[in-house]
Image 1 (cartoon, rainbow, N blue to C red):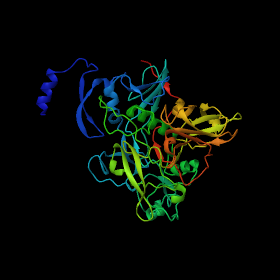
Image 2 (tube, one colour; image 1 turned 90 degrees about the horizontal axis):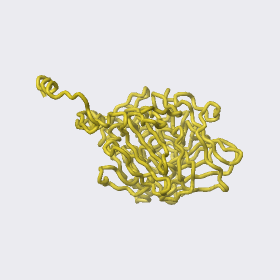
Image 3 (spheres, helix red, strand yellow; image 1 turned 30 degrees about the vertical axis):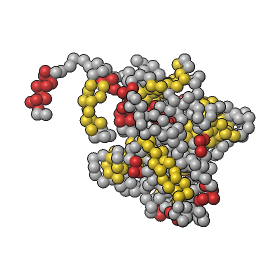
Image 4 (tube, rainbow, N blue to C red; image 1 turned 135 degrees about the vertical axis):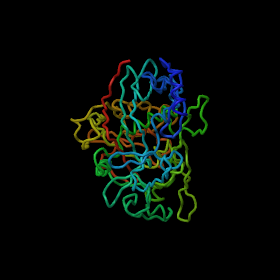
Length: 476
């Protein structure tokens, strides 16, 4: 449009006010497209919200408020994958091809142009509250009025769902490379008569066999604002999943079709949770390479990957869940969480503490300088149950009530031990042979932060601006 035409249009059609249903013109930065959006998206009262009836065991929630805002939430936040340098500068990858940037130029995922991360481009707010028989879960670009809000800064976590170690630089990474410098597992090739040689080499696979606290220390070697498995990032992703997908049961069957309102529906399937004889196959080491499912871009889908036997035949077809480009957000490898710690009490219960800051050195034993965010009752006997309720105080995302099933409420497994002392690193995600126990709310509460195993990893994560776990109430 010529400048003269625009000037004439502005003179003839300048509006004195804008209603919530009026359409505004703008650009979607993530997709690089122009279009119209309702003015309500910019109003202080606009947010995405679903609610769940606490007297009903179904994991499926109902939409409350603006369907359009919920539909547009992923693009408003800029959910997807980025390359992030050590100074926290980020550049959006093409949503359909992660080997290109959004501007069409070539992108390298080998670490030379930044770490391969999943995240969002703008701060946003999360509020979770109970009213009557309902639990409400909401998120938006502005605070939800009258509710306790947690402001989530611009942040990211490994797009791979696990960590990669730079064995030369002694740093945790998120990249795709078959160079021996980034060899997965414990940094050495493994032996087995069953698995394919590519798996046994562990070249191009996630790093494991380090304690959760060690992953944090290796990530901090990147500089200020870098860590591993930060709990509040994990919880924020879970909340976005529940809101966007409409279910707390992430392992529910995948449905490629949206509902009548154009919203996602269903889960992302079982994930990599059905691998049989994992110990005999390759000693519990990773079986999904870092390059798997990159072809999905920023998709919301399931990508099948064939895990091969020594003779090249298929041992297991692994259904990799992808959430706007985040691979294996549950299943495959047990995930260590940092900036949160569980402390066993003398009665066998758990008390959880979270760090006041994510930009300071993490010392999981220094609970005197953390926030107490609640606990989990003692078990009469050590064992597994399913999660019925989560505690979101401080965005802890820890189980608070058990007693669900594999298809009700959160439908994810939780393990309590009966010890009466000690620190517990809350482990999440589940592993490749744990079936329907795996999931976003999965909790394993029996291991110290120093615990290491072939199936345990922790993803690189970062933020430049701190997260405040105290939250804040904003007026209308």
